[in-house]
Length: 500
Image (cartoon, rainbow, N blue to C red; front, top):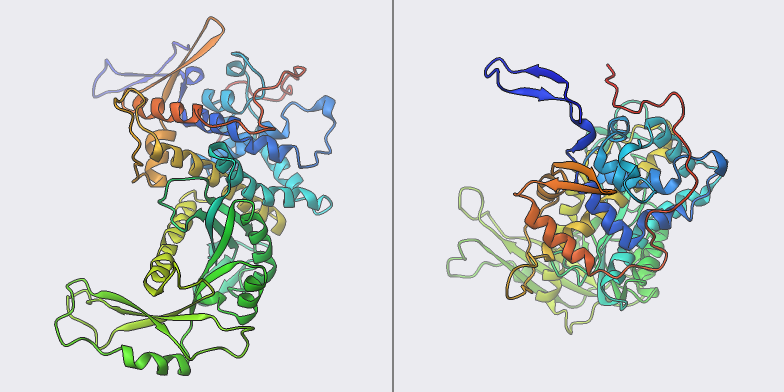
């Protein structure tokens, strides 16, 4: 450890700052991500399916190492590619991402930013289209791997939430366009998220982003939705026996309903207003004579006598009446109302149960907000590179989401009696700040590496590692590999170098 005193503080001359970078880390959670990845094989599965045209004899950083470095950095909130130059010297990242066993990784360095950029170029290479599709399919694989680490059986009922959302970009990015509604220059990606039983807060058997595609900024909400839903459905059936699609009003298209129904899937979608539906709703909009509840109420009523002529068969339509007080506590002039259409049967999804199922869609929108918290920048010079960046960021979120799910289900193993109740409340920002972005001191001795974490986070790590130890390793998941040593290039800095 370096003994160089860099500076002392004038407010207290006894306080000094010392350069101890080779033995300190602020991102010890990279080890937790690697431990989970070791069981699920997310990075190695993807690396095995992408084509690498480089000369194997000259490769220092295999795609598995580069993917781990990229995914773990994004999961920890390091959004800029330039962060790779700094994280290449971080001891936790070196040990977590490096593909060699023993204590040697502590003395190595990881890939620099240009190496990360070359990985992105390979994934987005239009001459190798299979690479980008392998990356896209890895989203579903990461969920399936987490599910199978707990149980080989599919869940009985799974819900796929599909929606588009804006990602603001700056400069003249290929495919970006000004959107009048958002008043910004954006991309408009389409994403699908999977959760068991339609509830993201249920005990986790694997959930996360299932499928995604990047679209131009002026794309309509349902543009390309038919092909998208087919692929999302195929992935979802690997996770659930019965698949239900939960859609917003932007996807209220008879062709999509007929498509989903024809695939044997279920759906529930919000319908936009029209004159016929509004007329059918009128008898149910009168307020009761007594004072309404303080917080208002929701009513769900089955409607009969409505069928869109473009529907191949009749679907159930449910009227939802919302009567809530305004900010000042007074009621509005009349209740608000909207409509849901579904091919789910009334048993067990009667009108009230259907409304409850649809209202849980709000948690999916929370997931989108948490993913935006990663501050992903789509600033590449080609559209396909920006799509690869989007997909990698979603995959990194899936990895962090799986780890958070284990955290919410974990208890301190020293507790007696063993706890079985699920614990919640760990939003992604809190989980990243408290658990993943925890500091640690690294000690090396006896051919072992010791990471000393703070007392405040040690019980959480102990419970989480005990939980991860019970996961079943999947076939194909692998740890550190023994391969011939390739030294770093002569121009590589072995210590962190400050750049203006």
